[in-house]
Image 1: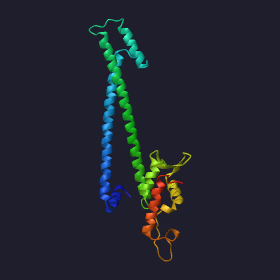
Image 2: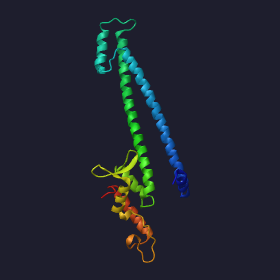
Image 3: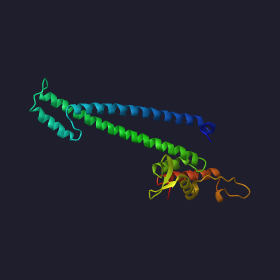
Image 4: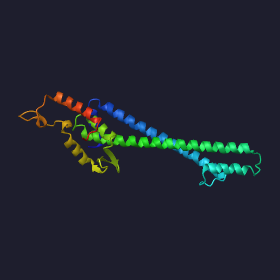
Length: 230
C-alpha cells in the first residue's frame, strides 16, 4: 500500500480527515521548531566565533583555564602601560567577556537538550506510526498498548528500524516481538472469528461482544501502569 492509498483509507474512517489534518499540522509544527532551532544554533555559533576572535586578540591560547588567563591579564596590566585604556577598563572588558562566554555556554547546553528532546519526540512518533498500523486491527485498546511499549522503553529504533528491547537489553526483531506479545496476551487480542455454526469466539464462552470488549479495555487500562509484559 502506498502513501496515497493509505491516506484514502484513513479518510474513509470516522474522523479520518481530522486525524490526517492534525498529524500534518504536528509535522509542520515540528519542522518549524527544527528551523528555529538550527537558526538559533547558527547564531550562537557565530557569537562563539566572535568571542574566540576577541580572546585570541587578547592572547588566549585556547588551553589555559579561563580563570588563569584572566588573572594573567590582570597581572600583565599592572606592569604594562596601555594607551587610552585604564586598568579598570581592561578588567571590565575581561569580566564582560567572561560573563558572555559563560552565558553562551549555558545557552548552548540548553539548545542541545532541546535538540535531544526533539529527536526523542520524532523517534517516538515514528515508532507510534508503525505500531498503529500493526496493532490497530489486532488488539483492543491499541493506544494504551502503544503508549506503554514506548514509555517503558520496550521498543526502540535501531538503524532507523523498530525493534523490541528484551529484559536483558538485547534486541529482538519487530516481527518476533509482536508475535511474542500477542502470544503472551491473548486476552487483548481481537476476536477474528464470527460466532455461528457452534464456534466459540477465541475458543471460549463469552457474555457478549460489548461486555467482552469493555472487560478487555478495563484489564488493559489497569495493566499499563505495570507494563505490558508480565
